[in-house]
Image 1 (cartoon, one colour):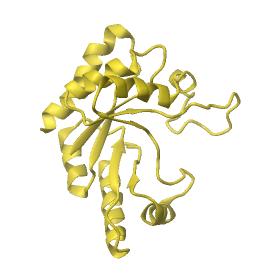
Image 2 (cartoon, one colour):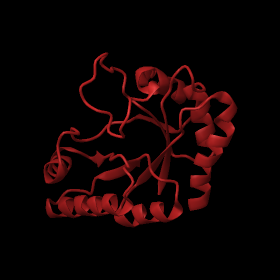
Image 3 (cartoon, one colour):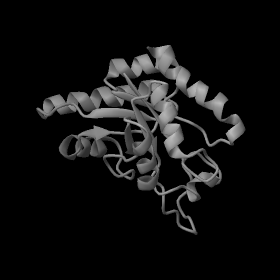
Length: 187
């Protein structure tokens, strides 16, 4: 299993290069930044988690600038989050698109380990039926629970990406340590 650390880089967070260096030192294989750089002033689509859109969505740095900082300070693979199929596609249609056009899938973890593991296994089965290589799956917002990570590994997930929540500098060490513990607990 590989592990990635994901952040919302804003003026309220430590510099992305600094966090990428710390992630690399802690054993993370990848450093991810979000890519929500254009949030409309008026929103019609509700925030999927409910409530108001969190502040960091409208204050995020450009991902290319953040990743340039990360690349300058590390040898870790720096990545911007992206999903292989449009979010409006549901069920089999999305899976067919991943098999037909994608090399990978980055689903958001929404609280159900078994459901996501089953979808990953189905995706791998569909790839085998289509005589394609299994797509690489990276779970965004992965739980830090070793049992959940083990189940994802059994299902064929290649990488679990944990979120470093938006933080103020005084909280950084404690929050970062919780994320880094994911890597050391699984190893």
